[in-house]
Length: 329
Image 1 (spheres, helix red, strand yellow):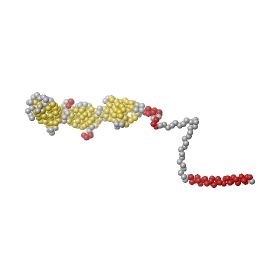
Image 2 (spheres, rainbow, N blue to C red):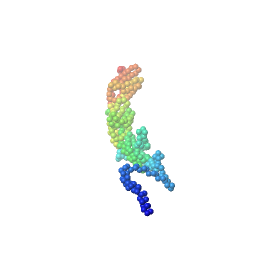
Image 3 (cartoon, helix red, strand yellow):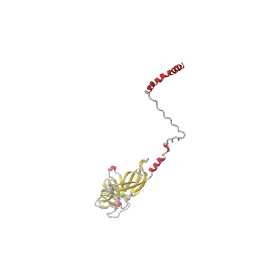
Image 4 (cartoon, helix red, strand yellow):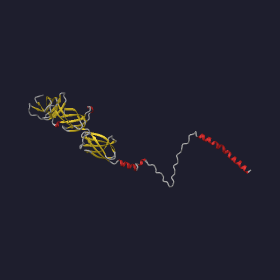
């Protein structure tokens, strides 16, 4: 009887739990159609007593690490650099007269490339940290530039300048020699007149000028007024080009005399005009001289309040003398 009573009591206690247990699978099926919850961050594990806490992350503003400093130090050590130059590909090394300039490839605040090294003479032996550079070499007025990468170890580079030389002289038509002191030359790039760039000005006769191979515009000045001749000349690599330019002009001197062949009168103001009336020469003295291009001119000689004049003509040739008589007005 007591066993029956315990069985009935056990069934009575279990009866309310059975429907909930059976319904659980249906509830789980409905949850699969919903978005699962966003996972929360895992909690940072607390270090055990015997463990050391992890090192904090490095502050980027704290500067380079020792390892980075070691790398930077190793890559900034200057390396040996040997630079040489030739006029042509097959030519010998230029032994002297070179000017080397090495620039950084990054412009500074003013937009210019910073000069980091310079050497003069023949081949250059330098020490440069690894990196990119612009190397410029000049030989006279010939020059070239190239970029060069410097790497750890020996660095060598040979430059080909492609240079030639030019020697200029002038004479008066008919092979009349001109005193060297009365000659100067200007050299320009051979481009159109509107875009010509001066390369050398005021050169003396027979002066040897080193230039990059190419065509140049040459201007020869005989005296300082209007005796000018121009020519385009070609400079070849590895060669000396000799050129003589011919002037249609002459040296001329003036004197005021009271009779033909007489003594020059002092304290005279001189003025020379072209046939168009342009004044091209003035001077003060008894015996002035100048150089004039071929053509017709008028000379005025003023002494005190009196003015004497004479028309004259310049022909190419040797120096000539023009007398102005006081009897001519």
